[in-house]
Length: 490
Image (tube, rainbow, N blue to C red; front, side, top):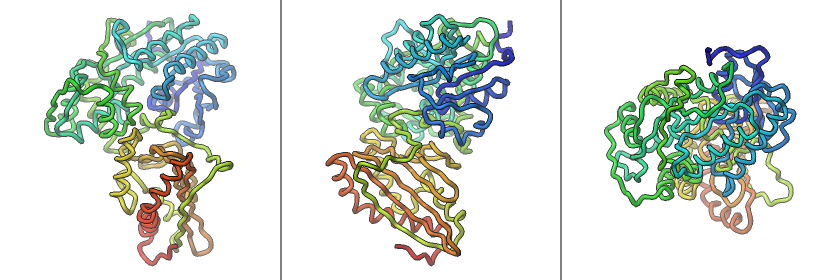
């Protein structure tokens, strides 16, 4: 029997979590096998910019809602949804959603569920994160459907949360005060190998239900993984100073400050690092006949992809509350909206001006007052926000992270709107409107803020003086970049 045989005719696959890190890479890989793919998304607009969008069917929906229409005619359901860190009851929500999907799949006559879970010995005192991963797998199998559960630990790939934590910690800190979990053993695996395993599990003929451990060929401690990264990246050997009293909770704040992973998410991930995540006797790579690449190669590929801005998906793409993604118009009615509006004109065409607008953020910076933006980013990280370390992709798309903003609207060459994901006592947007009338192009820059209670209003008053330094320079920088000098601004 060939477990990686091509799928049977009329094989229809429903992918949940298609806008997330793994899902966004799995869908194009699935399409190459000839299966018909349907994506279930809470915000379908997030998939509009995907290069494979026209090759799939996209349905608006939630795994916790009515799934009858989504399950119709489906052969295999791929479950990639994760609610980690979304409030105190996130684990309860995960279990409830998985139970709902299992019941809907059974009712619709689905043949198989493929689930990417978390690696960890069930006999250990597992963290809340890993325990929830196991509980979700059990819930999906509760109706008796065939479930292939692939339990992975550390996934190495450009844009993965594990890799970004590793990259920033080692790049930024030549000397690290480390907690006890750096001596914990893990078995990292490249994201490309995870995708290959998922495709094999989805398309395999015959019966393959069961729980399979997923890992690469190298068993290392987290400290050894950091040293391997420094070697591959060509950095000096990092000095690690273990401090036994540095608890997971404390180290999660440290991780949140140094890396792009927000504290609420870092807390859950770091608490899982106390558990060994190594492959047991039932290995997915052995069962499906896949030879995973070594850790050094996985890191090298991830670094090369990052350097070339070839990062098709990122952990921050996920619909998690810690990222607060928004892709719909803000509901202005019924609340106070404070704003800062500035206008500039230029003779340059709208396309050139809009291209300058779309350079904001990331390594390019914010045209003016970058030191103020940097301070705001550090303050945001200190209170659990994403800060500026997430950066941005070279080509913008709706739903992408852009420093501590999220792209909410993008209409070339007319409008770019960003929604703030920094920690705020309210909601904030930054919008540019570009309009060409005759020989004049007008750029309107609008910073809008909807305060939450008294603290929200106090915040706006507190930062208003800084707006006088930041926002005029930002707009002037856009115009200068597009044209040079001779701009009339107000």
